[in-house]
Length: 451
Image 1 (cartoon, rainbow, N blue to C red):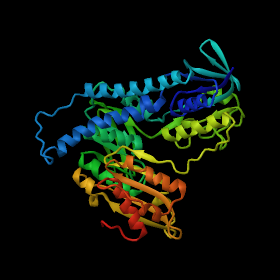
Image 2: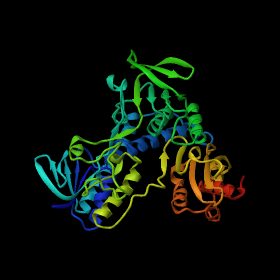
Image 3: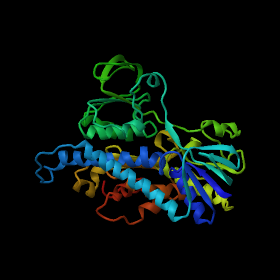
Image 4: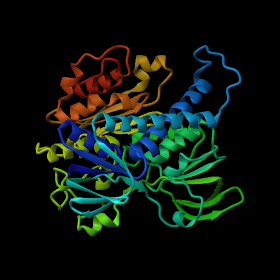
């Protein structure tokens, strides 16, 4: 009898299993595909491996001469780029498997089926556990007409391509669509982005999204906002896509169509048949218990914040509760990170969601930062949203070089309820990109020194 059986070895599942092992529990993990889940195999890691290669290629093309570096015969070898991606994926996957072995966790390959709240069928065996942790993850969303036409790509299919496409229509200008558009645009491939909302990256503020929009357009991408696909057919070169925008209806032909409209929780019939409550995702309390007391749900399958680092946190919370250590899920300061060009990251309140009479919005531009200047980077800014009365930091957004590495200062400020004065008085190293954030906090306090 196991103390816990974890179904799914993605970010939430494997972290939960390891934490439970640290707490002295006997744990089994069941995974039908690969250790590391979507993030390691079909999401975070392969995307960033591709983007790292394409970003380097773009930097050499666009900056080498400016830096006094003469380059001749620059070319692409997609086969080697893909090998770099595959090596990164395998390293992450093997790393998780090593951690299972190190922590004496039984790792079982196969598809799990819940027989009852304490029994899981795997292949021809039945495993028994005092607790069950559902970490089955998510799958790409797709619906008609896209699901009715053979050959349409989802994000899962993107990483299987054997050669670069001649052109791509990307349906959805959210995180997945923009990261993949960035990779393709860096390599000079014609990209057409169709976004239903008023602007790409609709969960971010418009001023943030506009910096990315401008950069993508400079790279050659065509962006259609407040637009939707109303027709899709096979054509000579691949697909003919009919798009309806506010003022016109038109057609685009492209070799590939990529659907990037998000992901949905993967909830199989065996979960539903047990009577586990499901709305958009599996419903849990703040301890991550479902309506069946010994069954927990964590990660994407809850349908809340579907990010790997949110899953890490939920995995730890569930593990502690199973070990009889009271812990509650806290998603009040989860940073979003988008590896666009330039990068985007935010935490806490966005300006678009705030009451303008109660907040102060302060910005500092990348162009005024010394380190960014040495990198030949000028696009973007840091933005701080603070409470007018108390000066408490409510939200932070950064769009610019290495933005995803800068946000932790904002995460701590939002989570701990720090004041702008506290951050502005903190000494930041010079010359660094972190001073972009310092400038925004100084501006919130009164006036930025370097602006």
